[in-house]
Amino acid sequence: MSTTAAAHQTLVADTYTPLPLLKGKVLVLSGVGPGLGRALGEEAAKMGADLVLVSRTQRRLEKMADVVRSQGSRALVVPTDITDEASRVALVERSLEEFGRVDCLLNNAFGIPPMDPISTIGIEALRAANETNVFAPLRLTALFADALAATQGSVIMLNSAVQFSSQPEYAGYKLSKGALAHLAHSLATELGPRGIRINSVAPSYIYEDVNKAYFDWLASEAGTTHDEIYAEKAAPCDLKRLASPEEVARAALFLATDLASAVTGQTLTVDCGEFHS
Image (spheres, rainbow, N blue to C red):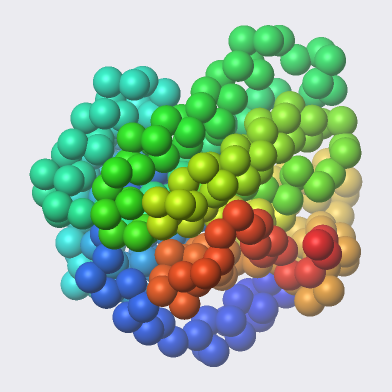
């Protein structure tokens, strides 16, 4: 980690104290992985939630389950291909069998198509990204709807600030994230009468391992330093820094708490002030 980023993240860590705002709630986390996926699971457990952990990789799920349990919460590991309907149905059944309730579905899994101008990207690559980024969240939300209605629960779509960008290399990803934003609005209207809230979170650059390595690569290509790349990416932000995965996770999890009981159909942009809406 760069010196600049380390100073920023130490400050944030020193000022945050978790509260048991999710005690007694069961959260389903689709997309357990490094970076934001791990932070969502760990921060939810620190807030008292029990978790259903979902991804394709058993080993990754077991490691995350250990983290959740170390915080005193329960964890259920369910290896799942979220692009497969039978696997999605089995996930819902297993979650309710284990916990008897679901209070929040976090749709965090995502796929990124080639970072090329959208007119040059093959249809199959775009279709694959949409299967993960749009159709899987749609079907998971529909399948969990009865359980969420029973708890007056919520769905959180992990979107991206890429939806506000027009850079050609982001266009394929923006296609699916833009569709996900519209999906969230439609589901909020459709499921609202059942007491289900649907909200989205849109981070920009998250300062985690993948982007740290990306910044190292950019620095090597430009003949500059990691800190200079970090400063360049942070420059458009009001806070002049980038959000950590923990910060994005905490903002997202606010939407799962009873503090957000009247919040639905909204997108919370978590980007240290890069975009204003």
